[in-house]
Image (cartoon, rainbow, N blue to C red; front, top):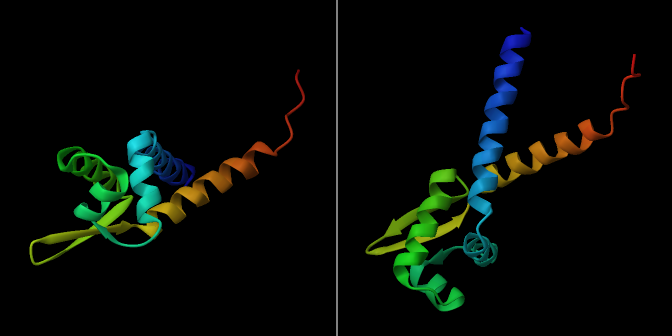
Length: 109
């Protein structure tokens, strides 16, 4: 039973690393901040952030592959929004880190 719990924790840690890696780029954080105001299409992001479409698209792909954003297509337009499930999972993982960090040390022998 301990093995199942341990592998589940490793999977959660691996996913947290993937999410944090995707968030580590300043341009991707700008995109996340823009999407925090609601769903946006690429043309909106180009205007808000001031980057070329190719750069925005690259960073959107990284964020989507990490699971931080979702998209939907309407006609020829693709709209992006934050994936609240992924953000909630990352928040839960950080909360566990905070709780674990408050455990007292075992006495040295």
